[in-house]
Length: 349
Image (cartoon, rainbow, N blue to C red; front, side):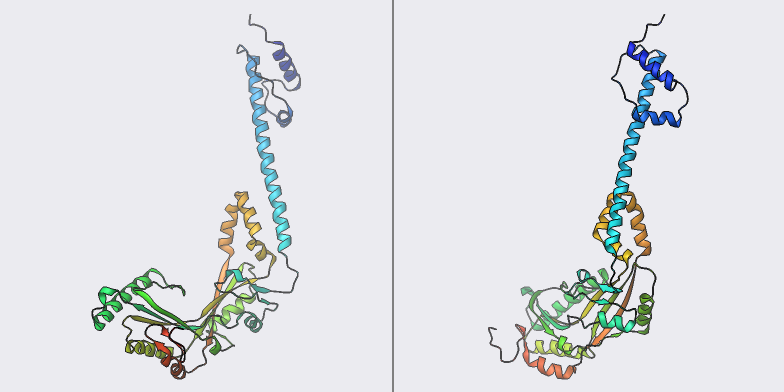
């Protein structure tokens, strides 16, 4: 005869047998009951069928309760995220009549915040196509190393060869260079920036007919995630003559290094559409919430990659000063040590 089971086992088996007989197939009601059933302390058994059935039942209770706990946590996180995203979306709605606006934080220079309430191209350009804040003629002189200053011709050949070699390498490595720092050989002897903003015309025009058509398409586009980048370029006809004269004048004054003269004048304005979905997508709070959901990030990133689009148009501003007349004022102020010193300024100034 098999030894009798402990009283607790017989009571449990009796309860299970009366409610849901051990050994029957699982049902929805039985799975639901497992969520609320308790799990007694471990007991010692001899491996009888009733004991093995009870152990299996307790294991299923634990698994059901663990799965329910995880499901509740996931549901709570999803519900909290959806409510938070809904609040952020409501905050992104702007009842003002503004259709387009620029965000100064995306600019490399200090720009005012401008808005436009019309989808007309002329109104758009009047709001955002103001003259660029940077328009200058930059003169940079770099002296050669001490060991290459044996003769004036040798210094020029040495510095020129090194400069053009490194410049070709930089052109292959990058399509465009930053305005602030262009790595060139030699030590900087002087770096002078001559302001041209007083001579820049106030009415910029689009560079080509293709830019005008691209602007019109953007103004009437239905994609709220489409943004436009307005690049303002300063143009000065025949400014190369001023650059050539400055290089020759500095060499004639005794400067043996290399002279680089550049016309710097461009600015980019990023204009966004004042749409609730655009504002919601750009909201830092929405981005943080999407990343926290993990699963949402897997959908969010491909969606933005497929829907976001950038349209680029270029406008041009002209410098209204004759190069010859400008050279009449620039030439007398050139200095081999300081680059440029206005007439009448003291040597120590």
